[in-house]
Length: 63
Image 1 (cartoon, helix red, strand yellow):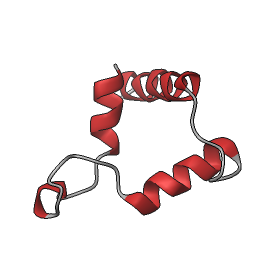
Image 2 (cartoon, helix red, strand yellow):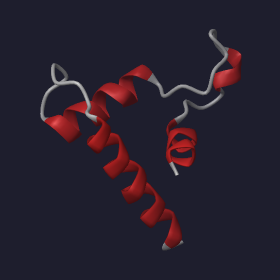
Image 3 (cartoon, helix red, strand yellow):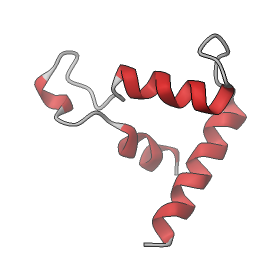
Image 4 (cartoon, one colour):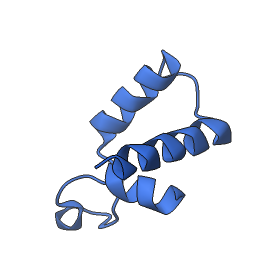
């Protein structure tokens, strides 16, 4: 579940830029943190990540 959600967040063409890992684009990640928390200064909790993964999975089921 978490792996699938993380895979969907990966940056496009991630294999072309170091560190050659499927990580989210920094600008997108910052946007998601602000929309989830209202601030970039607050770090995400484990509950936040699990909630996002569950929500993300439910969105894919509807397709």
